[in-house]
Length: 628
Image (cartoon, rainbow, N blue to C red; front, top):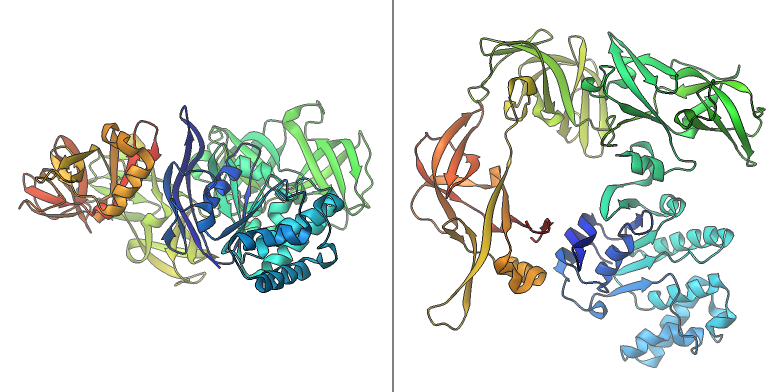
């Protein structure tokens, strides 16, 4: 049994081709993880790096908290099941399953016991004396699984093991592999391009595209809360319907105007997770709705206000036994127009025919909205930001009857209505000058999302832990002004990450018998840990000394003291003090570059900025990969 940790895993081939980009994931013991995506997305490459069959260009792979980047495949205690079974044709089923144990010099009686036990689990005891050519595809797959089981590995890796089977056998084997996972209680990592396999087998799914992880989540959350259009279209059968359009808010009403000519109206409360800046009728958006969330209108349908009416012309009807798929178009005048194409999943008793114009209803609760340009979801389960219209005069910020004194660090001219944005975590509850009423509370994992009524608008606050307030409570709130942005007035959020250019160097010891290594930033020489040295040399070898680097460290990981020549410190001069009220930050010049750190001092101070090297991220600027 094993847990795995993949941190900033990269695979770069000759010529700078990146097969896997910055793969980060923690896998718990006994999880069933599925990597899914189209051909060439990097899923099998990632699996092979875990197995040790591909070298990791950069990053850290841990199994049970032990770094295994340099371990041989045989030393990782991992078993892999391949797409083509990889059975020895001249050996019997028994010998195929026993082979790896014989190479380990295990006693014959133990080998016999393990092979029989695995054969019993997989139902292949009667085939032990047969050769692989005398077995069906499903039986060969069981033998391949049995060969893995006998080793009692920490982790099972399965690379598209069912792709060579017919549809009926695939369905049966999916169920068998899921039961096997429960019975063995071992960590499984499974690669497939079939989203049905992913949805039915995985406890969590990793969706990949072009070497990048698009989203990691449970099957239910991927289906309900896709992070972008690729995930939304890839997960779910038939795929989600997409319509280009715009959205406008008028008072408490919202209208989606689709390019195909259909309007979808709803109350603002039904669309309040969409940032207000998109509701100006100008931003191009994509409206998404799953076929399951569209229904054909009939007299038995109950509507509590959650369904929006529309019309469609039918082009194709597919009766599939337990359900019917209706292919149609919202554009009644041009039914062949791609922009209005829609798929509706309905019950098998629905009587419609090609050419019919039918009344349909679209869910006002289960729709999705994406930015047309970025294709990222803008109606997320957890909103990224609050966007509100504010006015500023005399150093006081006002909106919806609220007043906040701006801290000294926020310099801006008086202004009428301007747009302010801030992360939802920047609005904190329980104290402060703001007053709000809790409209709704949503538990999301180990966090709580609050819907807050402030005047005529809804804002959000995200907290860790269980809910502290209930619907209807009047609560005080405060704003972290270091994180606000007012584009019209040039106010930007404080960047909480420092990025400094540097190099990696070596110097011979005075004895000339060994080298000292340094992380150089300007004239400063930071002493790396042994682990950092191992990682940079494993990734770049001696090329590390000729590679332009970036050293990246969080603002809050730095500490500042009066200059005294401290080791692993950057000496610099304070250029500016940023007073945000609760906290003060210093902008410090270090060797011609600037960094930011918490500091309650004054401009002109000469200081040492102490850098915890174990918390520094090192990036190779030349090919844009994270080394450490």
